[in-house]
Length: 111
Length: 113
Image 1 (cartoon, chains in turn blue, yellow):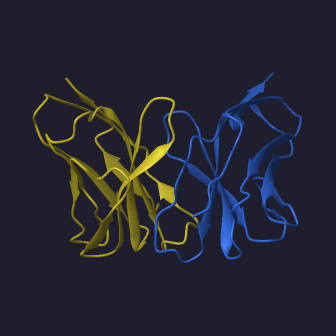
Image 2: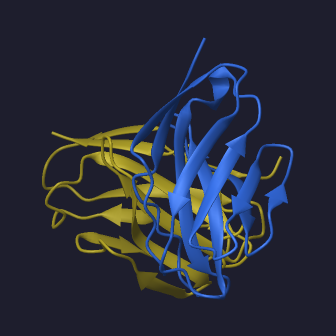
Image 3: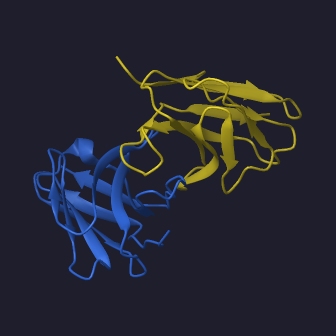
């Protein structure tokens, strides 16, 4: 699976959009981009995933660049409850393997 | 409600003792996983199982063992061979091993004294 690079930490003011970047320059054509988040001392929670097109659901939007070498997770109106560690993961859709969670980005949403 | 149950939430053991962490799911998921998390670190894969009676080692399997006799259950044994067992252990399942929609348990915090 391709490796990802994320900033270790970010801040965001409550009510503003949180834009979390992820670099995956070695991604291959059939690898998906997955985003999970982990609130302190809980298990990670699935947020969104995509292959080529931008995706949106009730939690977030995922923007993938045309060359697929990077992506951005957008939380449109961050709340204090969005404070968490966010993991960007790249994996084959049928790798038969398990997801590799790196260290992620620790997002702090401030009042 | 469907979900994954890990028990106990907190576990204390003396050094040199084996200990088994429970993980049960009623989601009818085929794939199950065990991860370890140390303070300030990401998750590291210990073992995973794609189907009953089959499992594979992850990145840090040494000192651990698992079984998958039933679809619903994937217990993890931390043996005395594990050099530094104190950690937060997370169990997860997914409907298939593609990475979509992992569901995690609430974790077991193991402290070895």
